[in-house]
Image (cartoon, rainbow, N blue to C red; front, side):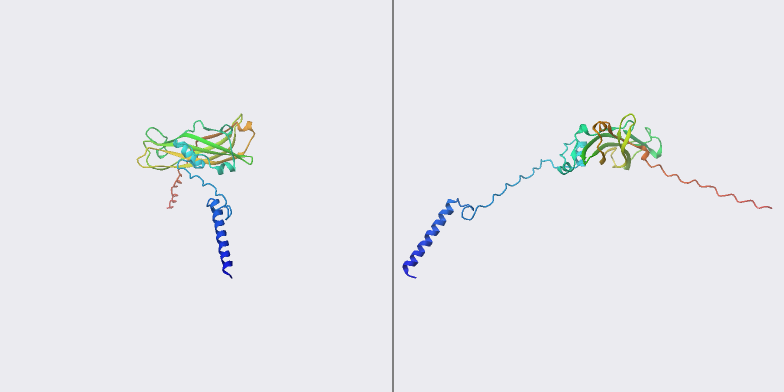
Length: 246
């Protein structure tokens, strides 16, 4: 190769390099242009604030309601699975007359001012309704309190509760009912403790609006659930021996 050709080749390389540098600067030193445009990156999702309420279950919302805290929003998964029902279209809930308190005496005796072991009361109730595939499901929360009496003491006890869905009318009709033995533990040094009972599956076919308006969920204590003490079989006297004939 002659010196003239070599010089022309070096000059061509310098010109190409200069053109590449100019194009790079014109592109604003970004990755677009000669190297191809890059895909735009989505903005980062904002971090969840510590004060942002988290979705919750029915039990968590009832616990917040009964404790006086603001109830967190429902879980979107629950709302997606079933359609929430407005409170006015949900069966009303009521404490059955004469069943709002439950008193127990010591050693099976009638509860009096001196023999009372404990007394339980129903304080608050709440419910939520959803509809799915022609069926309505009602979730019920019950809050109560147990107070010790003069003959009571710390330890585990049970309070008998019954829930009943009734269609009121000239002849009331029981649609659904269930009884529960709710365990409550009274710690040493405390004279009263609260208790909470949750039922999440009161399900029934969705009736006509006029019939649904007559549906009532009753809450109350059911003393018939209490186990009666087992009776020991009476000992029969041994048979008398026949007298020997003389």
